[in-house]
Image (cartoon, rainbow, N blue to C red):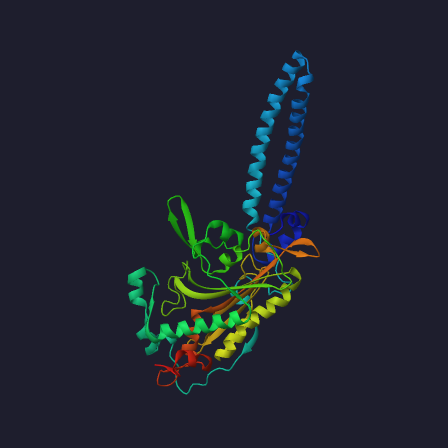
Length: 418
């Protein structure tokens, strides 16, 4: 979350940020008022507690009459202390519950707009396939119909479940393994994190409270655990409450099965695997010196772009607008691959600079010239199932076979998926 002292000193900055994100700007002033009321109560409490401490020190020197009178006064002081403690606790709970709704301050050049229609295209990369036939949607290809079993998956798991089998399953495995090897060769530390995480982890990384509707919860006795839609939260928590040497950035990656309720997605993308409740994902996370996060954001984004370049995909990049960017993000760039049969770009990657929003809450620090400072965090998709679907649609041929990208052919053992 943001630094409350910075908000109290600069409420207008956060009110403007809330306006840019099309949210209630009075929230910033409400938090400031409640924080200052809490500080005032704390000051009054300190005065009363000191008065009580002074009495406890002086009581042995008082006469019996003075002692009886002072004890009566101290009972009243104790009642006042209890009342003020209750008021202060309520004020603190109030402003802390509101503080998690205050967004990170966004990049100075971020597009301002109410939703994803305001996102701005910043580049187009690769070459679009020139088909001499009408390309099929990836989910209409015979290969997909044979190896992707959505109806059976729904029977087994419920809404938008699936099985993947045969050559399609093997190609996905090859694609993800190849990607992970590339990341490890680029000095990412491979982590196998817990799949379940608790509320502290998701709140500390900014996914809660606003993203709760998309996350599955699992109740076990009196405990609730969650199945997140990315390993980002678990990777971040690995270094919670640590002071790190970030003379070089700490780069982490994980390949996990992820889960998402797809709340509000009823009727959207009902065919294929774009919107599903379970999917594979490789995530990358950077922890860095605050002075390096702008430069490293570009580096991190280019790691994924290099991946899709090597696969030969046609794609574009989008600068995400204020109405579409999550609360935790300072800046976000999405990468979308072209789906020629759908005549649309679809998201395959999201790269985010969260500055100190997550690390402040998690207590992740670095040393600069001997002084502890809050580190910065960044994250980016490493690979996701949608890339496979883009490959199927872009690289299909007239006979409905799909040409495997050259960089995967040796590992897959074939030139074509058929």
